[in-house]
Each structure stands twice: as C-alpha cells, then as structure tokens.
Amino acid sequence: MQLFLEGLLVALQPVNLLWIVIGTLAGIILGAIPGLTGAMGITLMVPMTYGMNAVTAINLLLGVYCGGTYGGSITAILINTPGSGASVVTAFDGHPLARKGKGGKALRMALYASFVGGIISALILTVLSPAVASMALRFGPCEYLALIILGITVVGGVSGDDILKGIIAAALGLFVSMIGQDPGTGSVRLTFGIPNLISGVPSVPLLIGMFALSEILIQSEKVVASEKKKIEIAQMEGDQRLPLREFVSYWKTIIKGSLIGTFIGAIPGIGASVASFVSYNEAMRVSKHPEEFGHGSMDGVAASESGNNGVTGATLIPLLTLGIPGDVVTGILLGAFMLQGLIPGPMLMVEHADTIFAIFAGLFVVNFVMLGLGMAGMRFFPLVSRIPGDLMFSAVFVMCAVGAYATQNTVFMVILMVFFGLIGYIMKKAGLSAGAFLVAYMLGSTFESNLQRTMIILDNQLWRIVTRPLADVFLVLTVIFLFYIVRMQKAKKADRPED
Image (tube, rainbow, N blue to C red):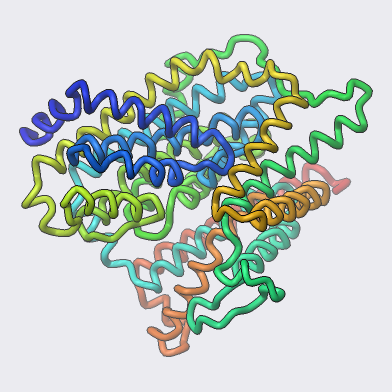
C-alpha cells in the first residue's frame, strides 16, 4: 500500500498527468476512427517516449491503450461502425438503441461500464498479479483449445434468429482464417496465387470492409431507393441521461463482465474481442429477457464494454510477471518497457518495484481521465447525428480507405477492404451474421494451432482432453451454452409458427 500511494503521487505529477490526458484523448480519437486502432496509436506514440522517464512513457502508452479500447464504442453505437474488433459486440445492441433515439444513453452506459471494467482490472492487476499469473501459467494447448471452443460457441449466441445461418457464417469465417501458411507445417494454402495473402488475411481491412464499408453500401442502397436522396442517421430523442439508480441496476452484468474480461485478459493470446463476446453471451444466458439482445439491450452494451475494458489491466499480468505479451498491444508495450531499461519478468517487481507501482497507479489515473474526457465529450459525440448522412458516410469511406491503406501501405489492402465490404453487404442481405463470421475468423488460426499441439500431446487421441480438469471446465460450459442456445431458438420458433 505504501508503494502504491508513493506511485500515485508520482503518477499525479503535472507532467505525468498531462501526458496521460494527451495519450487518453489520442486513444479515444484513434479508437473511434475505423482502422486506426489503439495498437496503431501506441505504435505511433512509442518514438515520442524516447526522451521520457519510464513512468511517464508507459503511462502515456497506457492512456492510448485504454482510450482506444473505449473509443471504438462511439462509432459502433452511433453509426454501426466499430472502431476496433473489441467494439463489434457493442454495435449489436448499441446501434439498435441509437436507432430508437437512445444513442446518448447507450454512449453513457458504454463509458461507465468501460470505466468500471478498467478500474476492476487495474485493481486485480495491482493486488493479485502473482496469483492470477500462476493460474494462467497452467494453461497449455489443451486448455487453450477448450477455451477457444467455448468462444466459438458464442457464435450461437450472436447468430440472430437462425442457428443454421450462424453456422454458415462461422464456417465462412473459419475458411478465411485458414488462408495463408499452415501454422504447423508452414505450407501455403488457399491464397489463389496472390502473394499478399501468404501471411493470411489482415484483420484491419477485413474488419473495415465487413462492418464499415458494408454499412455504407446498405445506406447507399437506401439513398437510391429513397425519394429524399439522403442517408438517414438515427436522431437523439428525449432524455439521454443515465441516472445513477438506472446504471446501478446493471451492476451484476458489469461486475461479471469485468471479471470475465480480467480473467481472459490474463491468459496470453486471447484478447479483448473474445472477452467481449464471452461476457455478452453470459449476460444473455442469465438475462430474464434474452430476446432483447441484438435489438437494443442496455445489458448487451454493459456486458460488452465492461468485458473488453476488463482486459486492459489484466493483459499486463503475464507481461510484467512472466515477460509474456498477451496480445499485439502488450507486444508493443514489451518493446517500450525494454526501451526504458525495464526487462519484464519475475525479477521486475523486485528490482523496480517503485516504478512498477507508479505504473499501476497510473492505470487507475488513466481510467479516471478516460471517464472525465468521455463525460466532457458526451456533448459532442451525439453531434455526429446532426451531420448530413451522405456527408458523414463519405467521410467514413475516406477514413476507411486511409485506415486500410495504412496497415501495409499498399493499394492491395484497399482492394481487400472493398472485397470484404461486398462480402459483408451480401451477408447482411442474406441474413447471415457478420458477428459469427468475425468470431470464427479471429479464433480460427489460434484454434487450429492449438488443435495441432493438442493432438501431438494426446498422441492423436483427442478424447483424452477430458482428463485435463481445466479443459473440462470450459467444455462443460460449452455444453451448457449450447443447450441454452438451442432451447432459446426452439422457444422463438414456438412463438412464431409461421417461421
């Protein structure tokens, strides 16, 4: 506690606080722009940290990280264009709420849930780092495989009203994830002779195309069919405040989502996207009104945002205590730590305890700054709805093209974005779930590599995975979720015999 309080005083020094504000604001802006993710923002900020001390530099980057994770929810809610993969689930209910005139309330729920998720994650990082890291260290390929199976099961929870269409979308996502090199043998497959696909399909142009460009195409179709010749954007109606009493009524969803995000964040290689999906599915599983999910449920927004922000602090647990980066962002942070002469690993807490606790304290400050900036910006975020729709989506298209091009600085990335935009448009017209596609795509390569390792460990007898207690926990949860999803689908068909 003494080290933490001393670290808090360091984090609150004017120069450190100023850089935290700058980093968090930059993260929110970058997170809200499709294609310009928080990870990209951290990469751009690393050169600025060369002349800074370790506490200032790392807290600046953490500000970009947390701000970027929250910022993706802004455009996800207002224009159904997630700024990052972690905000895809937020759009499932956030945008329908905006369509109902409750965009401001959805934005507030996203902000407050993000804040609570971030604070809980930072608290667990500070207090329970060694214990949670030792638990994560026990995960092998078998446990990873079972957890990923659980994650793909979430596809059933977000695939809309038709399980078959959800399975088709997931199969397409798995197919796309297999393009490129085989993770076991290194052999090239399914590239159709295109050299740019040898390393696989990049996530940024796919994400932009599937969600942003497809939405632009849908809206453009409405313009052509409409006599007004303008794109309609949802307007705010009525009271957009979120009273404390109403927010507190969702405390179970938010706390559970934060804990799920923290646990998943502590496991290297999983990430905020999976955390938001798992948290969302768990909220739907226990909800008294699961039929509202996907059609404008505050519980859905609260679960998604608390889940993905619960990851932010937890990803530092394996990085700082084991030297293992959990995702792209912590991989970049690993380089930033080493630039400051800090070598993540078991001895870091011993040799640089004062610096590390100042960073822990800085993460708390970052979340409070994010809350303050979000509340201040709440007056301006809804102004997006007042911008003429055709102008808005023209600007979004330009940002999408820039974001796709910036991933590898090649025109091929823009072509890829357009291709997946058309695929996303066709899927939406056919009633296929883009969310199911994305889950399967994002988990596909990890699923395949861990399946191969599991088969080697178990001597090609996959059934022996049931002898692994941790894997059994995830497999049992998978069966429970499947049973619940099938029962819910049957109930829907019983209510609508015409289907």
